[in-house]
Length: 194
Image (cartoon, rainbow, N blue to C red; front, side, top):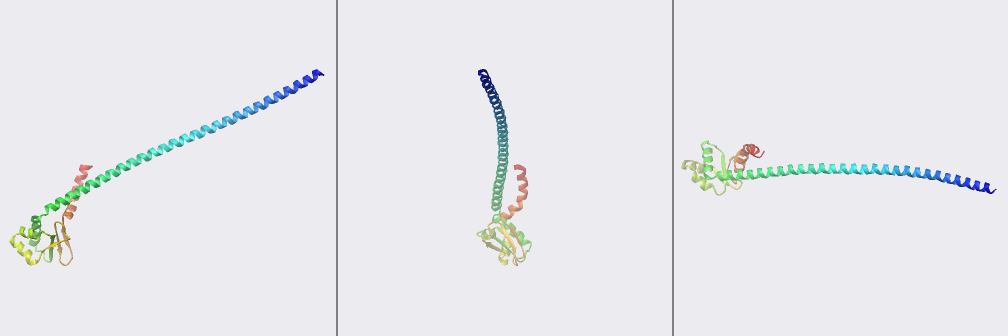
Protein backbone atom coordinates (compact mmCIF):
# COMPACT_ATOMS: atom_id res chain seq x y z
CA UNK A 1 0.00 0.00 0.00
CA UNK A 2 2.75 2.24 0.73
CA UNK A 3 4.03 1.56 -2.69
CA UNK A 4 0.70 2.46 -4.16
CA UNK A 5 0.66 5.71 -2.26
CA UNK A 6 4.11 6.49 -3.45
CA UNK A 7 3.12 5.59 -6.99
CA UNK A 8 0.03 7.74 -6.64
CA UNK A 9 2.07 10.63 -5.25
CA UNK A 10 4.63 10.13 -8.00
CA UNK A 11 1.87 10.04 -10.58
CA UNK A 12 0.28 13.22 -9.18
CA UNK A 13 3.67 14.90 -9.08
CA UNK A 14 4.43 13.80 -12.60
CA UNK A 15 1.07 14.98 -13.90
CA UNK A 16 1.40 18.26 -11.97
CA UNK A 17 4.91 18.82 -13.20
CA UNK A 18 3.94 17.97 -16.76
CA UNK A 19 0.90 20.24 -16.51
CA UNK A 20 3.06 22.96 -15.00
CA UNK A 21 5.64 22.47 -17.75
CA UNK A 22 2.88 22.55 -20.35
CA UNK A 23 1.37 25.72 -18.88
CA UNK A 24 4.83 27.21 -18.51
CA UNK A 25 5.57 26.43 -22.17
CA UNK A 26 2.22 27.97 -23.22
CA UNK A 27 2.85 31.08 -21.10
CA UNK A 28 6.38 31.33 -22.47
CA UNK A 29 5.16 30.92 -26.07
CA UNK A 30 2.42 33.50 -25.51
CA UNK A 31 4.88 35.93 -23.90
CA UNK A 32 7.33 35.38 -26.75
CA UNK A 33 4.59 36.00 -29.34
CA UNK A 34 3.50 39.17 -27.51
CA UNK A 35 7.11 40.31 -27.25
CA UNK A 36 7.61 39.74 -30.98
CA UNK A 37 4.39 41.68 -31.73
CA UNK A 38 5.50 44.53 -29.44
CA UNK A 39 8.93 44.60 -31.12
CA UNK A 40 7.29 44.52 -34.57
CA UNK A 41 5.00 47.44 -33.65
CA UNK A 42 7.89 49.36 -32.08
CA UNK A 43 9.99 48.88 -35.22
CA UNK A 44 7.08 50.01 -37.41
CA UNK A 45 6.51 53.08 -35.22
CA UNK A 46 10.24 53.80 -35.17
CA UNK A 47 10.38 53.53 -38.97
CA UNK A 48 7.35 55.83 -39.29
CA UNK A 49 8.92 58.38 -36.91
CA UNK A 50 12.17 58.29 -38.91
CA UNK A 51 10.30 58.68 -42.22
CA UNK A 52 8.20 61.55 -40.81
CA UNK A 53 11.38 63.23 -39.56
CA UNK A 54 13.07 62.78 -42.96
CA UNK A 55 10.00 64.14 -44.77
CA UNK A 56 9.79 67.07 -42.36
CA UNK A 57 13.50 67.82 -42.79
CA UNK A 58 13.13 67.59 -46.57
CA UNK A 59 10.16 69.99 -46.53
CA UNK A 60 12.03 72.42 -44.29
CA UNK A 61 15.08 72.27 -46.57
CA UNK A 62 12.92 72.88 -49.66
CA UNK A 63 11.15 75.73 -47.88
CA UNK A 64 14.48 77.26 -46.86
CA UNK A 65 15.75 76.98 -50.45
CA UNK A 66 12.57 78.62 -51.75
CA UNK A 67 12.92 81.41 -49.20
CA UNK A 68 16.55 81.96 -50.21
CA UNK A 69 15.58 82.09 -53.88
CA UNK A 70 12.77 84.55 -53.08
CA UNK A 71 15.11 86.67 -50.97
CA UNK A 72 17.53 86.72 -53.91
CA UNK A 73 14.74 87.89 -56.22
CA UNK A 74 13.71 90.54 -53.70
CA UNK A 75 17.28 91.82 -53.39
CA UNK A 76 17.69 91.86 -57.18
CA UNK A 77 14.40 93.72 -57.64
CA UNK A 78 15.24 96.18 -54.87
CA UNK A 79 18.68 96.79 -56.37
CA UNK A 80 17.17 97.26 -59.82
CA UNK A 81 14.63 99.75 -58.45
CA UNK A 82 17.35 101.62 -56.56
CA UNK A 83 19.58 101.81 -59.64
CA UNK A 84 16.66 102.95 -61.81
CA UNK A 85 15.67 105.59 -59.24
CA UNK A 86 19.27 106.80 -59.06
CA UNK A 87 19.56 107.01 -62.86
CA UNK A 88 16.16 108.75 -63.07
CA UNK A 89 17.31 111.33 -60.53
CA UNK A 90 20.60 111.84 -62.35
CA UNK A 91 18.77 112.12 -65.67
CA UNK A 92 16.24 114.64 -64.33
CA UNK A 93 19.02 116.64 -62.64
CA UNK A 94 21.07 116.69 -65.85
CA UNK A 95 18.02 117.75 -67.89
CA UNK A 96 17.32 120.46 -65.32
CA UNK A 97 20.91 121.74 -65.56
CA UNK A 98 20.76 121.73 -69.37
CA UNK A 99 17.57 123.80 -69.36
CA UNK A 100 19.22 127.09 -68.54
CA UNK A 101 18.14 130.53 -69.73
CA UNK A 102 20.03 130.10 -73.01
CA UNK A 103 18.22 126.87 -73.94
CA UNK A 104 14.86 128.31 -72.88
CA UNK A 105 15.57 131.35 -75.09
CA UNK A 106 16.23 129.01 -78.03
CA UNK A 107 12.95 127.16 -77.43
CA UNK A 108 11.02 130.42 -77.11
CA UNK A 109 12.64 131.77 -80.30
CA UNK A 110 11.52 128.67 -82.19
CA UNK A 111 8.00 128.99 -80.77
CA UNK A 112 7.84 132.69 -81.77
CA UNK A 113 9.24 131.92 -85.25
CA UNK A 114 6.57 129.21 -85.66
CA UNK A 115 4.07 132.04 -85.17
CA UNK A 116 2.16 130.23 -82.45
CA UNK A 117 -0.85 132.44 -81.81
CA UNK A 118 -2.85 132.09 -78.63
CA UNK A 119 0.00 130.32 -76.84
CA UNK A 120 1.73 131.19 -73.60
CA UNK A 121 5.18 130.01 -72.53
CA UNK A 122 5.49 129.28 -68.82
CA UNK A 123 8.94 129.12 -67.24
CA UNK A 124 10.19 128.70 -63.66
CA UNK A 125 9.99 131.74 -61.41
CA UNK A 126 13.07 133.94 -61.36
CA UNK A 127 14.26 133.12 -64.89
CA UNK A 128 12.25 135.61 -66.95
CA UNK A 129 14.85 138.40 -66.94
CA UNK A 130 17.67 135.99 -67.84
CA UNK A 131 15.62 134.42 -70.65
CA UNK A 132 14.63 137.82 -72.09
CA UNK A 133 18.31 138.88 -72.00
CA UNK A 134 19.25 135.72 -73.91
CA UNK A 135 16.65 136.43 -76.63
CA UNK A 136 17.52 138.47 -79.68
CA UNK A 137 16.14 141.99 -79.45
CA UNK A 138 13.58 141.30 -82.19
CA UNK A 139 12.22 138.17 -80.49
CA UNK A 140 12.33 139.85 -77.08
CA UNK A 141 10.18 142.66 -78.48
CA UNK A 142 7.60 140.19 -79.85
CA UNK A 143 7.56 138.26 -76.57
CA UNK A 144 6.83 141.44 -74.61
CA UNK A 145 4.17 142.65 -77.08
CA UNK A 146 2.24 139.38 -77.05
CA UNK A 147 2.71 138.82 -73.32
CA UNK A 148 4.00 135.43 -74.44
CA UNK A 149 6.31 134.67 -71.52
CA UNK A 150 5.08 134.11 -67.96
CA UNK A 151 6.69 132.84 -64.79
CA UNK A 152 4.85 129.98 -63.09
CA UNK A 153 5.15 128.25 -59.72
CA UNK A 154 3.83 125.10 -61.43
CA UNK A 155 6.83 124.87 -63.75
CA UNK A 156 9.91 123.86 -61.76
CA UNK A 157 12.24 123.49 -64.72
CA UNK A 158 12.17 123.78 -68.49
CA UNK A 159 9.25 125.33 -70.29
CA UNK A 160 5.57 124.63 -70.78
CA UNK A 161 3.82 125.93 -73.89
CA UNK A 162 0.06 125.99 -73.47
CA UNK A 163 -2.80 127.28 -75.57
CA UNK A 164 -4.67 130.15 -73.99
CA UNK A 165 -8.01 128.39 -74.55
CA UNK A 166 -6.81 125.32 -72.62
CA UNK A 167 -7.06 122.96 -75.60
CA UNK A 168 -3.53 121.63 -75.26
CA UNK A 169 0.01 122.07 -74.03
CA UNK A 170 3.55 120.89 -74.57
CA UNK A 171 5.47 120.12 -71.39
CA UNK A 172 9.24 120.39 -71.84
CA UNK A 173 10.12 120.21 -68.15
CA UNK A 174 13.17 118.31 -66.97
CA UNK A 175 11.04 115.44 -65.68
CA UNK A 176 9.13 115.14 -68.98
CA UNK A 177 12.34 115.29 -71.03
CA UNK A 178 13.80 112.60 -68.77
CA UNK A 179 10.71 110.44 -69.40
CA UNK A 180 11.22 110.86 -73.16
CA UNK A 181 14.87 109.83 -72.96
CA UNK A 182 14.37 107.08 -70.36
CA UNK A 183 13.17 104.29 -72.71
CA UNK A 184 16.38 104.58 -74.67
CA UNK A 185 18.49 104.65 -71.53
CA UNK A 186 16.57 101.80 -69.96
CA UNK A 187 17.41 99.50 -72.86
CA UNK A 188 21.09 100.35 -72.56
CA UNK A 189 20.95 100.04 -68.77
CA UNK A 190 19.34 96.60 -69.10
CA UNK A 191 22.25 95.57 -71.34
CA UNK A 192 24.76 96.87 -68.79
CA UNK A 193 23.06 95.47 -65.70
CA UNK A 194 21.63 92.28 -67.21
